[in-house]
Length: 369
Image 1 (cartoon, one colour):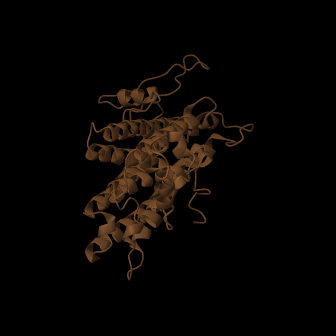
Image 2 (cartoon, one colour):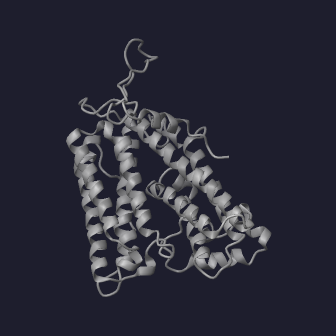
Image 3 (cartoon, helix red, strand yellow):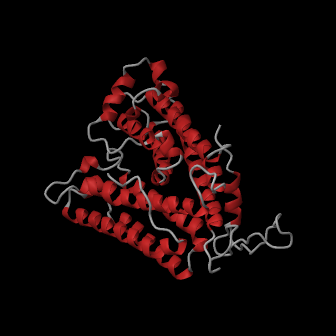
């Protein structure tokens, strides 16, 4: 069963056209409005320009975005499991499964930035997307899976007990774009991914989940001593996501001028590299727009949106999968141009967003890579 995203429905209804400013009753101070709905964003928190940083409101807005994003991944992995079962039963064709595979990977892409909390605790960054894979761990792990009986291959619990290389999206991709037999292994891998997605959602929003830790920041909290610390962790995660795009998703296939590395592009077999980058940029911008924007001034906010648009435009301008583009002189120039733009976006985030939030980047999953 996939989680019910009641807050998503609330946000979407608020973001519909014609949202008006509203007050919410304050149980601690009757007669004093607790918060307002921004006419610009439709979010139920103060509009910018109050002259103070409201880390409590930032946290609530960010958690709304996270619930939507983690919920989307849980929903797409359920659809992936259903699509795998339908394909292996012969009721749909391989293209239908590939379409759902793409949708699932793009739903994961925003979450790749958040390598803290449940993703870190559960090691999900590796189980969902074992990449870079410099030593073909995915191929070796798949051999172990394919050596099992068909009944075992279709069981999520069996897949979950194997090496991380066999458990995630790259394993499905290798099955789809090689001579290996996809069925019934894709059923087991898809089911395992759905279990991971549900566990991540519950790790955030279940009872005693990470969201509750964020909500109860204080001297007795084992993780967040004050509300500002959660803002800093999220801001650092976005910086990590952008750095991962520039250094890893683009830097690895670019290689050197003398020798590019096309097969080191993420998802190069399926040609999804560009789409994944686009989806991760969209996810980061969503946190900035719907999570941080209420405490960012109009000038800074408008500019950073423009830089995001320019960056995503450069993804589109490449015109071919990155694994192909890096092998062509003009294509390589476009990939390098995108990499430069992502680095520029990182700098502009530091200049335009961080100071508005009163934070700088802290320790990141990218440190020491």
